[in-house]
Figure 1: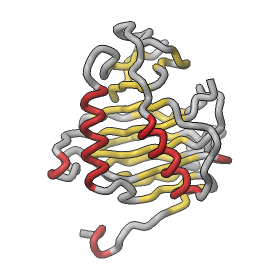
Figure 2 (figure 1 turned 180 degrees about the vertical axis):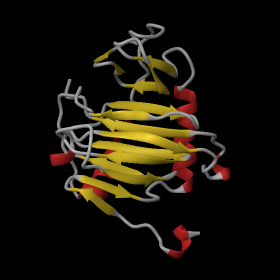
Figure 3 (figure 1 turned 45 degrees about the vertical axis):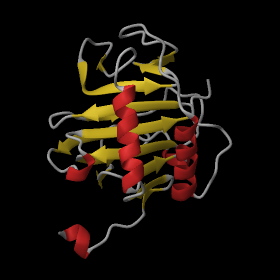
Length: 214
């Protein structure tokens, strides 16, 4: 395999945006997967997100700390079962701060308090968008589990080119902050059947950690 012949290394995709392959070790991947399965249970569990125009996102989502809906945050699942959102655990915030230190070399003063967890099956994708509903400019931390995806990281001005396509595999970390914090990004496709068999996951989980500033 190419990955064995040419090991992947830390890459700065653009100033403020860094990809760190295999950042999560096998034990932490299993721990995160177990936690995601618990968080996905109702109430306030995994849901289909409906857009204001009447469409639906193909990736399903569950939130921690505060509930995201297009385009804001709430303490309850206002576009679902109405239940209070599940709490954001301290250990997940510590993981986020460590991710930022490892990727960007900075610690950050604000604690992470929100997680958006998206589940992608083989046909799911995510259109180009910006994470702009938070009041804090702290970096976004993205963790991948399961199937490999193409992650498209663009610019702050437009949803179109220039952009860079990055292959995110299970265990990879991607952090974007500073001048890249409001860059458009998306997932044009997932590669079904590429998850490590030992993980026991069919599909892709993406855990994004954010500082709300709320």
